[in-house]
Structure formats: structure tokens, C-alpha cells
Length: 187
Image 1 (spheres, one colour):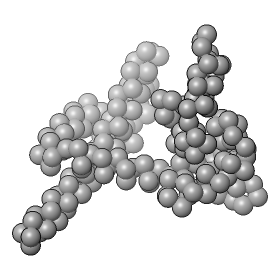
Image 2 (cartoon, one colour):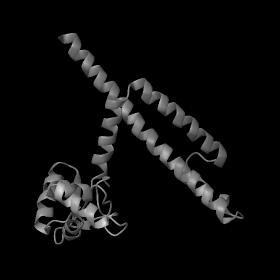
Image 3 (cartoon, one colour):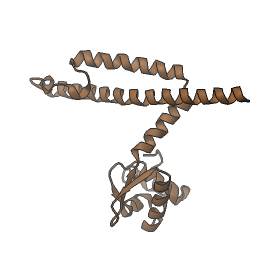
Image 4 (spheres, helix red, strand yellow):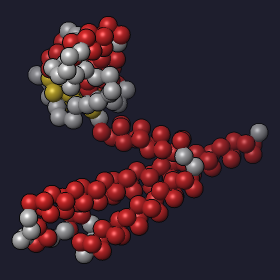
């Protein structure tokens, strides 16, 4: 969720109510609904979203309809219709940001570092990917070791996800630089 999203701040701390009031006063309904929906990964009703965004249900529905048209939100059902963030949109946005903010060589360096880390995980667990790790790894070990192993497997999954994003960003950056080179050559 956005740093300015008050959901976590509304019931905690001495200034919780103040933060929510300030968020409500300084943000438009569109911005508040956007702030809320970007943190929602499970289908949620417009009523629940409107409560978090401090707006009317109809106001939330209007904004959600706009966000659906923009590809930022997806929905299921009709009565009641439920909404959540469109993960594909946010994945595309992340790839686009990586491609714009980093050179192809920087992206390749990051890929190389992650490939090395991935290989170390494969060697450590004697498995080709985190989902292939045998449950036997967790037998006859204490709780702390299990917790540590889960953290490592979680990191490995993150590495795999980051590799996919970076590889897509490299393709996008290469495509964009080829397009820019063609445009410059024709000018």
C-alpha cells in the first residue's frame, strides 16, 4: 500500500486519528481509492473499499470503474461485484520502470548476481528450484532451523521472481534502445 495509506495507522499510535484526517483532507476520492486498492490482493467489495478510503460506496464504485478501464483493477461477479489490484498491471509497471531507470548493462549485472545466488541455493538444497526442495530437509531439525530454512526458501523464490522481472526489463530496454536507434538514424 502507499506510504500515505492510513489503514494501518488509524488504530495505532497517539496521532492515528490525525493522520487519517490529514490523509482524507489532502487526497481526492480518486487518490484515496487508488491508495486503498493498490494494497488489496483479495477480491473485496466496494463497500469495504469505500470504508477504508473514507468515501461513499458510489464514489468508490465510480473510481473503481475508471481504474478497471485503465487496467489497474480487476473484478469478479456482478452482484456484488468485488475488486482487487490487477497484478499483471503492477508487474508490467515494474518491468517498465526497471527498463527506463537502468541501462541494459546494469540490468545484466543484476541478473548475473541473482543467477549466482540462485545457483548457491540449488547447491545448498540439491534441488533445481525452491518448489522441488524435499520435505525431508525439515525433518529432525529444531524450530529455529525450520524457520531459517523457510526464510532461505522465501528468498530463493524472490530471486526467481526478480530474475523474471529483470529479464523482461532487459528485453524491453533492448527493444526500446533499438527503436530509438532507428528513430535517430532516420532523422
